[in-house]
Length: 323
Image 1 (spheres, rainbow, N blue to C red):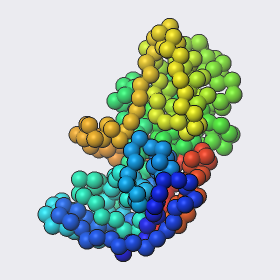
Image 2: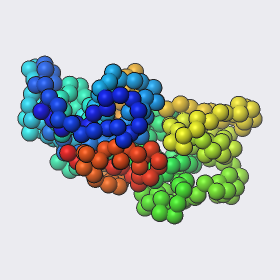
Image 3: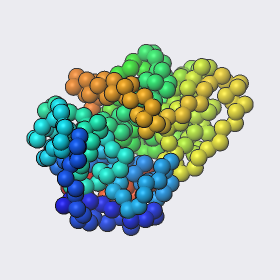
Image 4: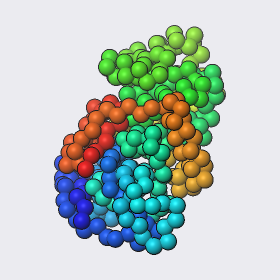
């Protein structure tokens, strides 16, 4: 048996309930994991509401990230043993005290990687890393503007941008969020008010080479007017709630590119490159170049309220659930 957050039908987040359900024994090439930390991500909330690109069959257990200890092995499992510390990247099924998953979804964890950090390094850091490395081809010395800079992907983008040699300007909506961005490596932190003029002053009128935008809405509209020639505007998400439209004449006149970032599709289509990215991220974590900010640890039963905070842009860094 396992205690799990169950979504029985697409709808409001407050419909989610903690239930006790049967956990099947591991099948061939599968393991069972006792969860020690469960990552919470913005797409989890979209999935529960039926607003994500994919719609799983209901009922289902949300959650893409779990880190913990292997407690049982199915047949033909190689390279893992009972007691191993691992992280698992899933499509759904993560919000549970124990889970079963295929070994293809596992990453072995060294002792120096906490379970909390492991969850953050999967989706948040994985998305930001892919965005900046493959989609933007960020170069040393370029200027990176990070919107939504106090969220989990925003902090990840700041740290990864610095690791790749960029000058990083963080944008966040309050003094405490801007202070958090600076504490995590940003060279400068700005608010959304008068952002266009502030960026032009800071870049001597040139604009920015890369924008990392998980926000959308008005922030995207402003970003289109901040781009340097040959710039790349990364479309990561729409936390503001409004999916913006692009005046394509701006892209023509300013000669910048708008580049979509869909990490899930990247994993499915370029698995080997994804594995290389994870290897690099965990190496950067080992030498201290990236360090997730864990903004909160909450009981599994509070999953609905945690998701609501994240959907309303109230979270700071990464929030994890503890069974």
